[in-house]
Length: 136
Image (cartoon, rainbow, N blue to C red; front, side, top):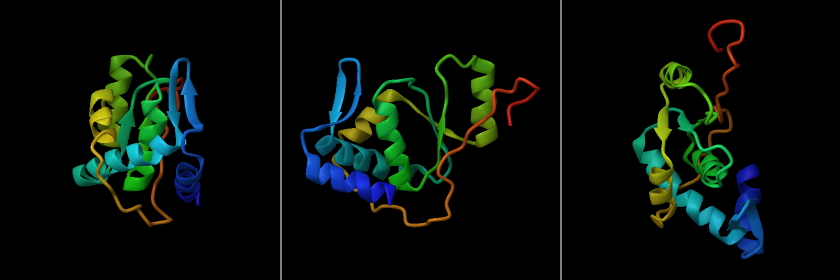
């Protein structure tokens, strides 16, 4: 249902703003095709979690939509996370780290990906801060 809403808004709302952060802006008409292009690449690369580390940059929510389309869970990483904690989460989750450059290449690919249709799939993975020991 969530992806259907994004698709419909992308089709219907065209040049209206979908995402904005500072000077950056992505309109609804761009969001779905961008996410589709990245989703096609993510689907070919595997099935495990995709780690996203970009703070408030607009490629991150667009990549989250791509992960949903591809049927791969996303793992948000805070940009200020210490390197050891980042490695621990990536290893524990067996996640693929998606860089901004890789995401941008996928967004611009123009590829199409069928929307994943398993309603019981894992959508995202979160870790606790680990203040009582190892993050869970």
